[in-house]
Image 1 (tube, rainbow, N blue to C red):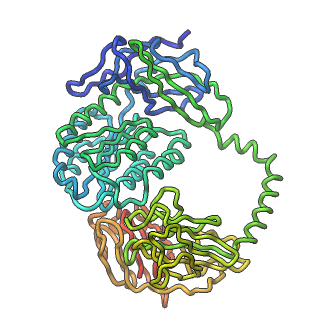
Image 2 (cartoon, rainbow, N blue to C red):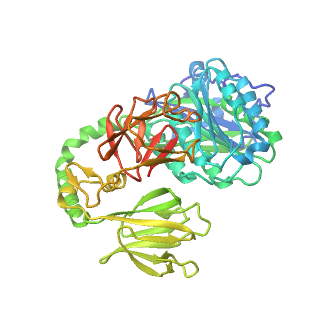
Image 3 (tube, rainbow, N blue to C red):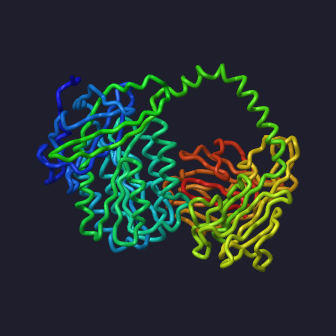
Length: 562
């Protein structure tokens, strides 16, 4: 017996859509694009069903569907009511404006505008562009004219930070509530500037979205021949979206319309979950049959309430936790005397820090390398490794074809000490190692990287901090700009000493530098998006000491102090 009568998908239409109109058409693909757990144990699944052309199949009945949870068939389910199906849409456009898009930028803009013409007044849109930097051109808004105005001012330049942009888009979409949500990404080239990868983006989606009982789909579009098909397909598949390939710009508008058509014609299926545990992992399938063919869509979520469940279990585990804590202290004491990391120099004044973890750390281009160097084509997939031995850290070559250099000479094996420099491929790498007194056993490796040679909690590291004298912008729309550090120097988008007008994430008066005797401090002036020091967000209106080599981030602009 069913809980209610069948109800077809939303009748919202794009202009002149092509839609399958009956169960006599065979199903080719089914996808669960989103789920809703706000009324758990009532679960709502948003399901897209298409034929071999990618055209949505409408007017399927309940008898065309089967729902399985934990391997067991769900006896009762229903198509959800009109209120749920007619929730506002939140659509985030992520657009490639790198230099290679110059030939296609106009068609790209027109395709997005045509998409937005079909959105309702209650629907919301946002816009992110990426090239050398990732910039939020428009937060989510019902004012489509604002987004269209931002689109009209786009121009092509720079490199391609594709996966950084998707990562930023995920964070922006997490702010949206009570909506049917989707991200649409367009790129025409391989990523050549991101710190993120397709793998790290998918991991962020799992940890920041799915594990927090949220969901939305990411559609990816690859324009032309030189695209990351594998990465774009993997991101789409992992999020309930779909990868589209557009050989030419003439097909862009049609693909955008196809995506909108699929979103608007999803089925919303509601059922009561049998999962009674709080924080339990729920896996299931939706099977769709039509015209003798079957398509299966899988889904997974965590039942709400994990926090309260853990709280009830906390007391019985206190004794065990205490024992584990003592063991951890012993292990920490045994090994904390060495805390180490390397800095991979990706530009003369710009480096990326990699903490050394465990006994062996691989160096190379491959994804399994803890020290991954992707920007240098001279680096092999597995080029070298840093091993922790009884004698300390040792650099070992993994290939006779390209030996690392220390002191300008190729070596198969070399001992590394603090400040040792070596070259892998064409990339300079700097070793850092700290030997900590017992009172500093609680200091994390991240704190060491952030505060190398600084005072912390009354104890001093053996290397004194150096006072910075100037600064250079190493990332963002104003990359390459440098300036001298002076007392009470302000940084902002307007009305500041150092102006960053192209970074819309920067407040009018964002931050201020102070000089006190032989020390320099940074202060966030209550900015909207905050100020970070070496990746750690600082408290507003509080002075934070900075040293030479530190990186201050305001908006999307990163500033190295030198």
